[in-house]
Image (cartoon, rainbow, N blue to C red; front, side, top):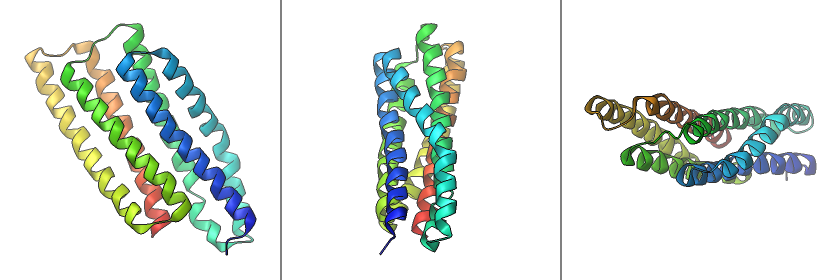
Length: 199
């Protein structure tokens, strides 16, 4: 049976991961409704994730002295912090998009919406893995990361074709590509958590 102190730390880690999933939901709403209000909420959550990482990592390191089971959790807060940093990148892109009234093509909107929905599913499963360390969920997250990365790369290629054909605005291009890169980064860090906790 896990020590109570380790259970409490795992619960904090789960809350941190769950907060990242909520942030993706807010990003979806900000993107769909062109709303800074959702971005403000997400930014506050991302800041909390960033601030809690070092303390939580140190607490897990201390816990390894009492409970060897804590060792697998040590890298997880850092990965969630990186997820938060990628979310901040997306927030920055969306703020620019809203402020400068930059329009994405319908295709680009559907591609980003699809990837944000997929990444939310991945983060929900990652939060569950933190509690249950379920190998089936771990496999799902790993497979999803590969699929998200493939899709994002494919969407980047399709975007280049739209750009050449004049179907999208050149000033939308760097924002779209930065969002794709950030989504791939989020998926990669979620996969790293899943791999370590289900190995």
